[in-house]
Length: 162
Image 1 (tube, rainbow, N blue to C red):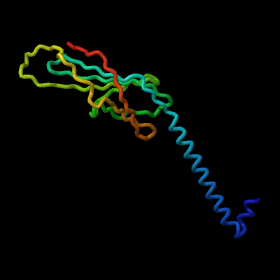
Image 2 (image 1 turned 90 degrees about the vertical axis):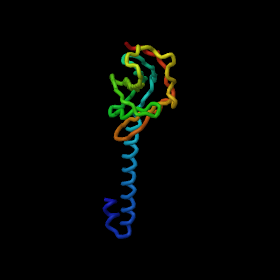
Image 3 (image 1 turned 60 degrees about the vertical axis):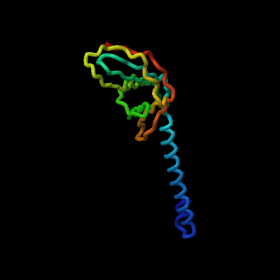
Image 4 (image 1 turned 30 degrees about the vertical axis):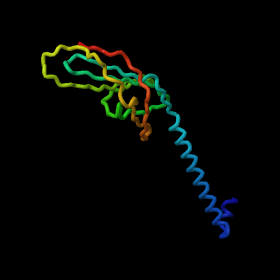
């Protein structure tokens, strides 16, 4: 009754409109706060990041394999978009087992050789750690893109394939 009688007088109409504007703003901010709170629940924890060189298989072909493992909590809509290592966008595979994610990527290096009958052997010198010493994993979550920067990768044992 009070609001109805307040709205019927010409004096109080501006007050009623102002009250309605404040009410709409309050509802808007409550919705905004609850939406932001939902987005913040996703947590990603890096478990390991490693790389190793491989040699052999096909003559004059070698490469580097990268592995990234992390745990996620409440990240149902998480999607990995791209993986960058040493400034290069690499092809990658994602293996997800509940909350444990494993991303594997590989960089193949092929060198030319004049001798086609070259014996497969492991080079004396292994290729150095990537010059950037960092990897970037670009992911999407709830239609928003973000990145994980990994600045420490551990080196695994070199593999010799036959």
